[in-house]
Amino acid sequence: MTGLVSVAIPVRDGGPRLLEVLEAVRAQQTQREVEIVVVDSGSTDGSVDAARARGARVVEIAPAAFSHSGTRNLLMELAGGEHVVFLTQDAVPAADGWLDALLGGFSLADDVALAYGPYTPRPDAPAPVARELREWFAAIAPDGSPRIDRGSAATSHAAFFTDANGAVTRWAWRQVPFRPVPYAEDQALAADMLSAGFAKAYVPGAAVVHSHAYPPLAQFRRSFDEFRALREVHGWVAPLAPRPVLGRLRLDLIADWRVLREQRPPPARLAREAIRSLRHWTVRAAGAALGSRAERLPPSLRRWCSLERRA
Image 1 (cartoon, helix red, strand yellow):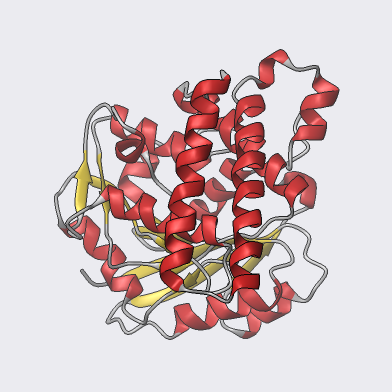
Image 2: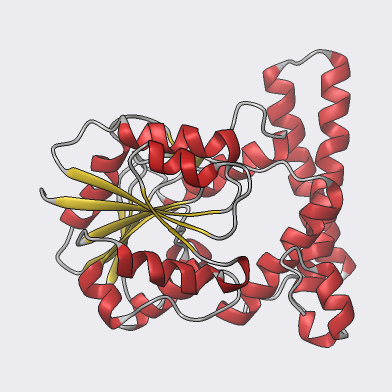
């Protein structure tokens, strides 16, 4: 595969991490011509100038004009490549072969419309976040080989796609653009592509370094938005009854504890991470339970619960 490939990034106040992303893209070892296209929605931290200084084409829009799906459709329109690779402003390609590895997913079959890779947690990621990311992506391809999904997505792994580290073919996007949903636009795109008869590929060797460490309230709101969107896109509903919720919490705490013990941290760090684990899974369960049932809440409460402030 040769020719122009576009790397597309929605940006708002990307800070130093955005510079890491741009420099990692520029450092890719590839025979392809690479363009970087940025849509900035109101940065005040110098992100626009920093992106242009690194050779990116930058289009500025008003903050109110941003939407997860609409801005990515705009990036598709602006991009010149037949393959458009999406990153977020804090998802840093993990190696200089990332781009070619990811685009190799389209060589697996003629009907592949989407290709995506895994997240590697940051070195300072909280223990539950790091474990969840590693286990989630390992479960998509247990043998470490690329995976292709087609047809009805019967499991969460078969339905998954991410535009924090994912590529879209233009010919398929012309038929199936990003659906105008408030959140989880990548999950909606995958569902629509599969329903249209296209395939998607997972490429384990195309990783980005990407994880978040939210304070408790922000984590609750992020979980609320995520599970609200999963209900809207896939109909998935998190359990609410005490028995399954507490059972899941127990399993996650035990799994985190085992990983922590294997790392043999100092006692103080072990205790701190154990508390962090309990807080993480408890907050996530609360956000998931309410987000899955957002339609039952008053609009003012929905707005308060949402990190996106969506009523």
